[in-house]
Image (cartoon, rainbow, N blue to C red; front, side, top):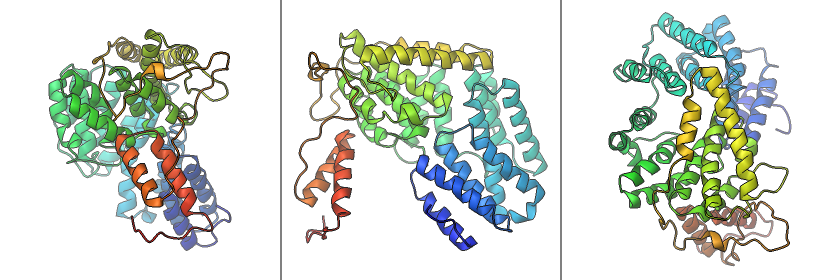
Length: 439
């Protein structure tokens, strides 16, 4: 933001422009600057709207430590100046109690008693406002599932209640019910529950990408290999390079590892190298690292531990070196969550993922499946973690470049991003003229 907005109209324009940006550091830093700018106005409403944007940027930018802080400021304004909040703003305030509950669960340094205290605060606020408690019971269930205790009772208390205007969307609730059945060992019921989301009948900002990532292995176990292939290619596009969906990226890596697509898994890992640095949520990072370790462990078992692997920034990695680093960090995170929760749930879940055997010897995902022995290491040359695979020469004609980018996107191919970048470079060049061919 080059200059601070001088009027509230300019501030609102800047807020709208920021909401069109993808989640990440640019959007988050701009949101922080807009909060600073809003504080200079005498009116309270601009600050309220700026704080709402900031909390959203923190939440979907995978910064759970900062999201509750922004909401605390918002809640103070709500208590002190309730007349500033119209019906829509009031709805957003009560909706975001759930965001804070999720953020606190993601931080192992937050005591379990504090998690319960926040849910008590949420319940009391909802009751005082005359709001239905189904959303509260939904968060109580998610805490029980996270901790690994009293899950069945908490699920019934939530799932049996009538939805309210503050309930999570249909797609998210379907996903949560399916995950409950999956954790209970009932793949068939989980897949039946998921079907409206997997079929695209119910969707939202995070769905169906979240459900797809979790449904891939149950689909394979049920013998639906074609559906699993199709959903992997489509679902990966919905979560790649997204810090708030790093756990889902990890599950796509795991899918590659268990279907004979280890080389593709290493390519996808390289494409998502930013997640090692940008994910500030310990819970999301643990989920991501678990998937990364499943992949690296499988590559090592196949005798290719010397291959380059994209990992934590600041150094180069081989598969073996990165697996050891990931193993230590993920073990530590799982232990920290279990110490906070007083259970062994996260260590147990991690062990179960690492202990899975491959489900298929080979599942063709793209037109030409790459093998690990094609990922060559030149003798005598230091191994560097690749940022991405080399891309074939770009077509000279813009329509052909667009066609290639779209085709690669449909495959979920890592080279698609490079094609789109090349296209963007060409059309923003000073000498660019629009082609006669509208393709």
